[in-house]
Length: 265
Image (cartoon, rainbow, N blue to C red; front, side, top):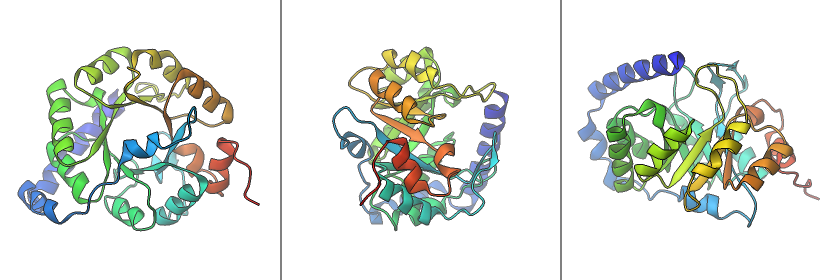
């Protein structure tokens, strides 16, 4: 949890600096000129019956792995994922720890038709408005990082802005909190926040606590078709895959191989 605490403290400082450059009112003034969002949950639900939808992640680095992709071109990666069959994208925008950028969201959306989740550490309502302005269709809200009142408030603002929320949980208690706050899409992160170790069993153990009416997403550590079989049988709707795909030379092939899709032709 110390790493998460460090990241959150850094993020609050960063947000305070952003507010001095572009006050919240300046973001609000841009809202009317923005195009409609792309339906993130609709994209997940558009999958085949009894299949898993893939949310393919675009990230250059992580605190645990360092730089994952040296030749990093977000637009190219997005196109590779779309061709490979991804239903949606996740784009890391945190700069310090993941070498991301807010600009990646808009850049990616110019090259694909898929909806985009802005993956960052949301600690302030300012970032919810900011997410809409930079072109996101959905945002990540981490239960472990937020008070219940913040979670409810950020979800309400997101709803008003036509943003959808992937509410990330690590424990049964966090799932209960997410459900109580009205989460429509819950993600189980298989990464232990204290050790940073990853175990897909976390999703398998916690799935039964997610209501059937809620879109269920398994995140992190998903690397092979066996994992997909386990998660499909457990009743998940989607998987979020990042490091496994980002580390591959041919990401289109890697995505198809993961889902055991035969090569075209």
